[in-house]
Image (cartoon, rainbow, N blue to C red; front, top):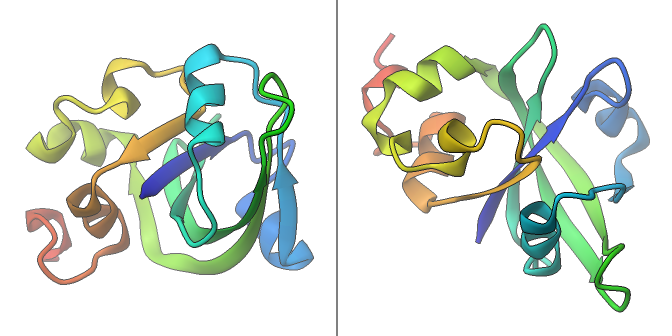
Length: 135
């Protein structure tokens, strides 16, 4: 499964994750976001999305381990992968039909968002992605 994790870069940025290599992703309180965290499995692919002034997907990571013994405070260990070739803005996401029904667009405050494989491909620019990458 693929997910998008939102973070405020002034608190914890993708650059911070790259510097640390791994981190525990916790501190989530929204019930839907918690459910998404508990559903993660080692090997799941992640997009790191910076909120605030950036409002862009900026990098990738991977789930290393999940500790969901305490369902109200699951802890997911993630490992930094690579920066995206270029940031993908929220405006670009909203403009693409792939995201029409996505919680990323419909539930703007949700901090852990499931992604379909084609949405992940769009954000990373992998082959077969939507027209956004034809630049």
